[in-house]
Image (cartoon, rainbow, N blue to C red; front, side):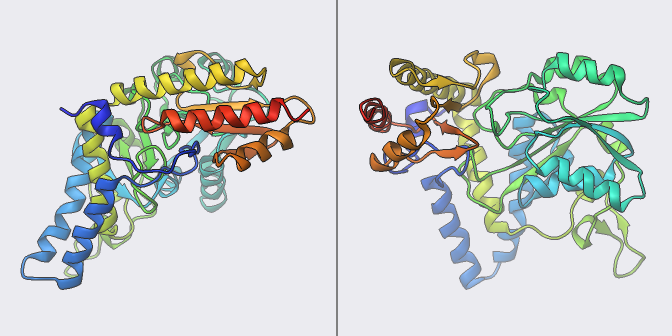
Length: 373
């Protein structure tokens, strides 16, 4: 078992980095694994191909443990979006989705709708309706057409940091499929993934495994209802002797072979997460969030994201008073603090590796903002 301090020591981002929700600096162990697999690919000694082939099973096995499914219910992907596309094109009927969700899911559903002659139909909750709470979803399902067969949500909202209650959503979704875009919470939220029928995520944010990494998982119920529509050679069997047919289970939701080096990178990140435990990471992140909240409260900066620990992950969204956004952004820049700025807000995202020095730099930026008027 790894301690949280040992886990945090495996990250080497520069002080001032508070943008893990945009990109998680790649773990040291992940880079070392990349070097090892790269050397294997460089020399391709006898038996090297077997080592490369093992990476798919390796990453699926550890991903399955974290989302609490079997390894044959997991398919490697290059990011979150391909997994959501595979899901969208396999659906039939209406799918409840928020217009304010990150574009990956709404766009996947729109593409599926236009390409399937209406077999898939997005049922869109209008922009500005609010967080995807169980109450909102229940109300919209009550007034939705009878053919709504699935509900798609983000585990953590990319703009507001709101964390969905998957267990409560399962209760209101009923027998419909619950599809979860988990990219903004996977690795820092000990969520009830067993409540979801589809979980898609990538490794470039909170898992700190770099781009080109990800997976999608399906329950047996999802596999029974979804029809793979984007299967490529890696998702089929029978050729070249017979006409290709879709492979059973999650394997059918694959198009081509995933880079084994990318799979190894993700596997290491997931293995390290398993060793420390998601709950330990979540607790450390929650502590860092509280410290950010204390700093912004000290300087009277409005917090737009939820303060309830059950409704947040590692994201704090700030909305400076009118006329002060530019000053805050400039102060963050001048003090070497990296954060995201969108639509009049500043999104600060902490991690288990966020140091006291980084938080002190953030506080200094807030001081500069307060004293600039």
